[in-house]
Image (tube, rainbow, N blue to C red; front, top):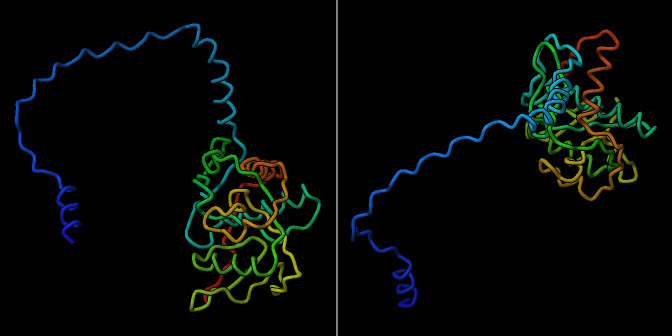
Length: 243
């Protein structure tokens, strides 16, 4: 006890006492900014102009903003659906589910013109679109995790019971089969597939790479809407019900 008391006493800070006056601080002159280098500016200008033109390219138009909201939102349905479609097209196989979280997106789309810069603001990361083959137990954990925030899963509907657990899970309109021999293909970003946003249950699963950045897939989907003469819209469809 005495040893601990001595240690505690030694660790305490002694009260501050001014022992001498500090010498006045002499202000130093602020260095003048360097003059612009015309040669450097001329070298950078073409690249600056090219990037500016790319970022301001209008890809499509949204009549109403697609925003991040708790629970089901048009934005999360839009991105989840396009992940399934793009992954299926690249890999040449059906993809049952698409998974995205609010935390994996930094912004939504404003009403009006959607530019490439808007897509970069939504998805500034170099995340690749990948597919994992998930057994029943992993799929169950996915819906259990998403039920806490009532987040939808593209390609599925489910209910949240009074105790916060998922119920009546239907994938592609069919009841969820928890059999471990059944595998469900899930399209998601490599960030989430690696356990991001606390989705650790995905980490052991091998990832099938599409070679497509999720940001590119989003931009291409907006362009596809425009090419088809459609505005960019997404709706809340009741993919998550509260019992």
